[in-house]
Amino acid sequence: VTSARCKVCDSWRLTTLGIAVDGVAEAIREQHEVTLSVASRDTWDTRDTPTKVRDFMKGEPQVLVSTEMIVPYLPDSCARVIVASIDSFFSLPEYRIGERALLLLADLRVIAKDVFLLQTRKPDSPIIQAAKDGQFLPFAREELALRGKYGYPPVRDLIRISVRGKNAVKESEEVCKALEMWKPLLVEGRPRLKGEKLFYIIVRLKEGVRLDDRLLKFLRGLPPSMAVRVNPPILLAD
Image 1 (tube, one colour):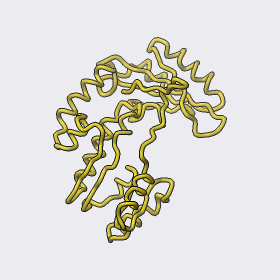
Image 2 (cartoon, rainbow, N blue to C red):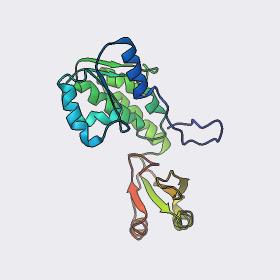
Image 3 (cartoon, rainbow, N blue to C red):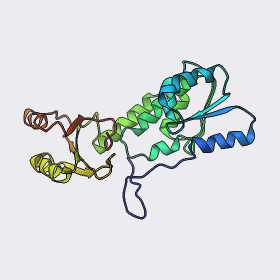
Image 4 (cartoon, rainbow, N blue to C red):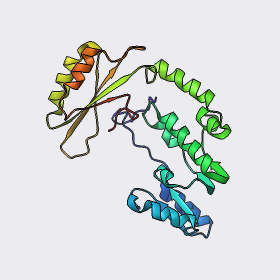
């Protein structure tokens, strides 16, 4: 949960800007004479990733710099794993971001055979401590308490309806009116196509209350163009 907003437009839809893979690669090249490859969605075709990771494990290149997109392709063991930056994760407006960060760090720690280094400005964060010590229960307890306080899953169920298209404004307003008794929240999203409109309608059920027959019938009656997700992992993105 974040209260950070743009100082200019007051929007919460912030874009994270970190040191980036190119910055990390440049710093390594300045200090070490090694062969190095930068892996990101901008530099690699994901279809070639398995082959390039196999080449890396054979020793060429010696250093692989990447975003988290590389993790699913890594083998069970790597000699050294260094996380140059994790702090930008914590500013993302997603209710599961702490869980995502910890799972990522836990996966990397298991993979690291000899060395696992983590650079952070928040060494006392429960997430960092859990990744360091391998003790996840304290983090889980604190995370569950926070989700209960702010009304997020698994304490309270969330229903998200995505409405996109040229008529999204009118259609989303009609859906909100029909769901008035559930007090829906209407949020404008970021459409992928130019000229397209995108809105998210969020319904937060009360604690301990599940989908009743009336609400379920309404959701099932929505047109196929409207996507319905219950407890989506990312609330305001498809």
